Image (cartoon, rainbow, N blue to C red; front, side):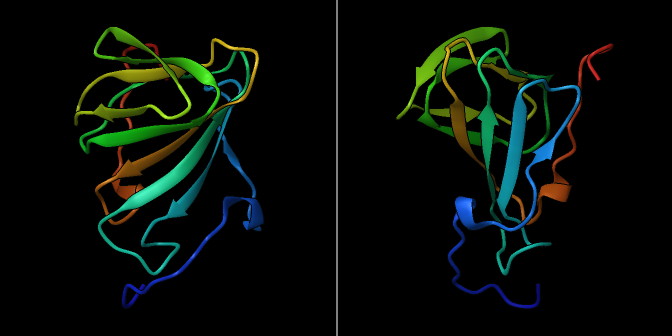
Length: 132
């Protein structure tokens, strides 16, 4: 995008499809801000939904990340330490920290996430051996 500018996006009004991965059962996400898609810079954000019993497999990436739980309950494990969280909780994940998410409840677990990078393409995911 040539110049950042103010804009509003609503996740329910997005015309594109949710992104999914067969390796992360029950997960889907929508990128809300990313300089390759929106007139934004230095911040990439999105919404992750994890169905009951679903999980985002353990991984790491260089940029730090922030999660804010907007609905439901689950477990976010960071560097081997599980954190039981529910709506209203914010989790800071340091850069290069191994982390994963599991929905341990019977309801939708929904998380807003943010990276301090221009574009989601800058976030290179890494998985433990045999993890994807």
